[in-house]
Amino acid sequence: MDQSIKFDLDLINRYDKAGPRYTSYPTALELHEGFADKEYRAHIEKSNKAGGPLSLYFHIPFCDTVCFYCACNKIITKNRQHAEPYLNNLIKEIAMQGSLFDKDRVVNQLHWGGGTPTFLSFEQMKSLMDATRQNFNLRDDDKGEYSIEVDPRETNNQTIAQLRELGFNRISLGLQDFNPAVQKAVNRIQTEQQTFAVLDAARREGFRSTSIDLIYGLPLQTVDTFSETLDMVLAVSPDRFSIFNYAHMPTRFKTQRQINDTELPTPEVKLEILQMMGNKLIAAGYVYIGMDHFAKPDDELAVAQREGLLYRNFQGYSTHSDCDLVGMGITSIGRVGDAYIQNVKQLDEYDNLISQGKLPVFKGVDLDEDDKLRRAVITQLICHFELHFNKIEQQFDIIFADYFATELSNLDQMQADGLLIRTDQSIKVQSAGRLLIRNICMVFDKYLAQKQQQFSKVI
Image 1: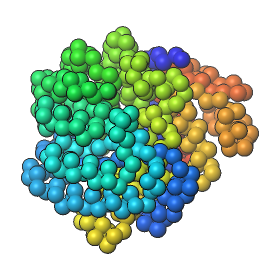
Image 2 (image 1 turned 90 degrees about the vertical axis):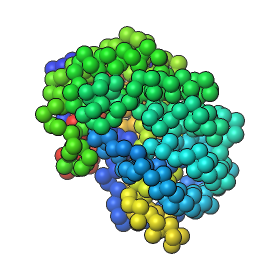
Image 3 (image 1 turned 135 degrees about the vertical axis):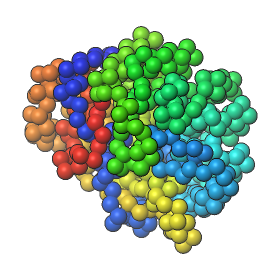
């Protein structure tokens, strides 16, 4: 499989418009408040009849300090006791949700995100994992993909050993940038020594995958400064990189208002950073998975992509398309059966529903047949950069050229621009189109027209 990318700055400038990241289709904007506890339970029943493994996501919203770029749902506090009421409610939700899913459904994936999961003490993390094990069928053979996001400023050798003891075997380290001026501008002071000590500890403890998170487009970043950060990280050779484009949307995210707009790199500089970054990573032997992700050729994501088994869900790229995703904690989103489900976002709402014995759902959406068809098309394109019409036709009993006549016509300009090759049987994304895969997927999104202004730009 060709996993190369090509930087055509003219094309990127022409196609750089707002669009979804497609961690789901339909996107989370289509979730509505007419979907709650009752509807979710009905989908769980259907899911149990279909069977299959599960994936669990837990949202831990607490952080010790605020990072100005952050657009996540978080609670900033230095008082560790503030997590106790939330954890008590989360454990109750685990019991409620666990009672609804068949016990023979093995949990192949588990992920703690946030916030900062390592904000919790070991005792708190252990109680959370114990409750999960009591209510769900967790693996005990270390073959599951059990991952956690960590802040190296909140983690040490003992923490890493404890996480391994709890069953985690994959770890993602937040970094963003090593440059002191950039760190000060975004209120995240983090040393090279802190970061790499955690990475070394994870390797010693036998974590099977290590990932580093970076962000380009932060204030005061230049091509040279970000290149220096990248060189430092490449020297320690993590298994994966997640390198995100900073989307400055201060009208939506109050925290971002503390960033000085005049210090942000220009769009031209951001593109230069992107090009430098891609060239360095490819030269270092990493392959482009897609949508900000690079991995070593022998990493599970790269292998799954080559084998046609890669999937995309609310946590990003995944190797388990067969898992229903159960989200727990405030603001978490799940995918169960033919529905997406999101929990309430505020602690008081969460506490109120849990105390009533209700699932803390406040939004959701039922997928119709057209949604599922378009999801299959977009998933194939964004994960594998190619689409064979006959597979879709067999799965959904349609004639692709008839059903998507308008969409296929709308791809003509992209084909002329060298982003893809379309035949009567397939679409194959070219090297120049890989960075613009969101644009290609957008052609098949029936909801996009009225919602496009609510998304960040694709590059």
